[in-house]
Image 1 (spheres, rainbow, N blue to C red):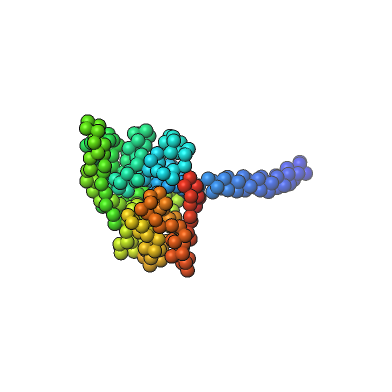
Image 2: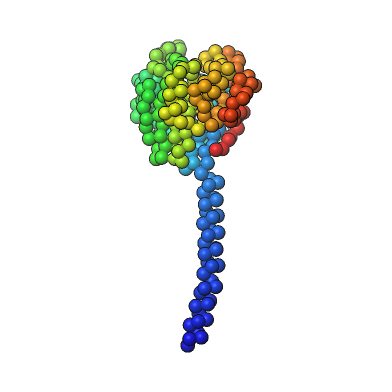
Length: 285
């Protein structure tokens, strides 16, 4: 009897480490799979248009000048539905290269268009989007539009005007559209992206960066309507000092002549990681 009990105990003792090892391996595999999936992914459409896939798989679209964008890859330019389902839509101001296809995306996905208050109001009063699909920021303000995702409107030094073709007269009309903004987008894992929108230099870039501490900055470098490469480099090296930067808003308009090479030259000596993208490219963080 004692021998039988001893044999059972020895058998259990031998099996237990095997089970523990197998469980540990399974947990490691699950963890590795989760880590591989829980990344932030950015797709650049051109100009200031980005699609951000959050770590939990939410799709965020910003300034979608897609069907009208001269540098938009054909698969998106010719089929707006190819951008996929969108969970959150942000627009920095009403200029056509930023508002772009946002009304169509809002209606097609039945989601709210988030933007400056005095841009969203004419969009609804003119019937461009239904009133229930508009969400108004002012010069600032924070919302939690999706679980775990925070969006804060911040200053941008630019202008905003809505140009609309009146279907009754078939003529273009100009409507005041408030003040432009940039966005601090904090994702579920705490990763923060500052989409600057269209902006020139302003010293409160320093305050915004120190207060919100963005990990990645999307910065315009084209010049004429926004910062030129040298001004963008000055802002980054002197005030913003992020870990990483993606230059945007260049190469799609003959008046925005700033180039990636000029920006890289102006950033020489900085430890900030420059992540150059081409239209249609995807990067992960």
